[in-house]
Length: 187
Image (tube, rainbow, N blue to C red; front, side):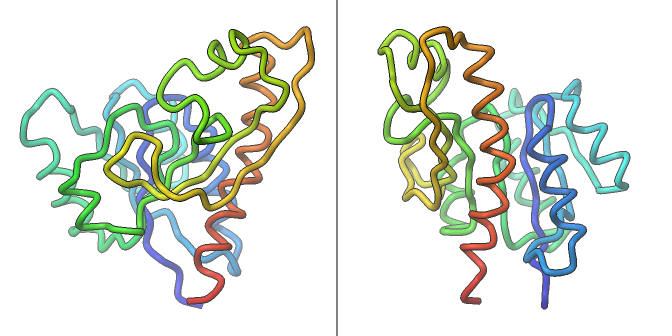
């Protein structure tokens, strides 16, 4: 099996990155993490990249030309697939066109509900009975690409934002690898 060279974009703790690194060490998993890009030099997830000796780059999005730097690094490392794992920036149309149907994101809600930020607060406000996560393709619309896989759980009356986040993350650790396997099953 030829593993696809993959870049994971992060902004924070990197728990999904850690999970993907672990999965990618299995010879039957279809991707290998070859690069990690963060827009936050203090992102804890960068520690996982360093621990596993994966090239990692912090690219400030304050610079107008940051996208060019991202594209140069993706080319340098021969990246053919991108996973957004808690990357808190909008991906540009330029990058989306270059990697059409090759960028996926994990989102902590059952899309199309609760796009964008503050998903757990929105769920509580709306008294949602079901919650979960969605892995989807990235397109020009925020959290608007086609869904690949969703994982669902039923909420409880005493769920707060932290409890919802914890339950959702447990599902994310299953959903992200399953979505990647599903994508590459027929290649």
